[in-house]
Amino acid sequence: MSRTLLGFDYGLKSIGVAVGQELTATARPLLALKANDGVPDWHQLEKLLKEWQPALLVVGLPLNMDGTEQDISRRARKFANRLHGRFGLAVELQDERLTTTDARARLFEAGGYKALGKDAVDAVSAQLILESWMESRR
Image (cartoon, rainbow, N blue to C red; front, side, top):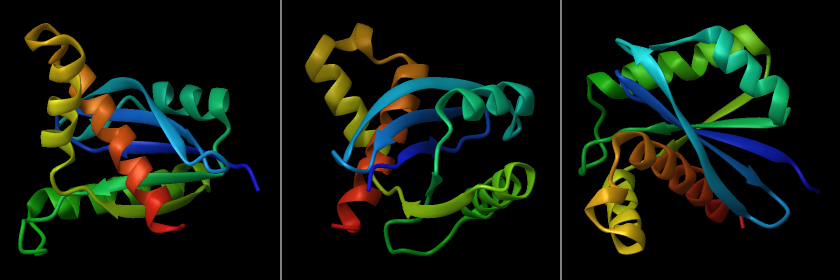
């Protein structure tokens, strides 16, 4: 079964977005949406969903290293619930510990410090969240 998936790296100023294919278990970064205190431009998000027509949305859940939740975890859950409520799509949460660190390492390796723009880091973080979700389902 081949489903298109969208992954999100939730943040208060920016929300990274990636697209993936379940059949190949691969994902690629798309973009970072600007957010105002964690609230995205819902119209822009709706356009993305119409363009990609995903079967499932995966939202990164930021946890402390010991697995406990923090304030941003609660806000990411709220974002996931709003995605489901507004668009009626299935939404799953995925542990996102260390994805930003991994994203920075990947980008630096590919292009040095110039590649480490905030939008690029957020979009690659979303890619890693989506890839780890797919990997955990194999």
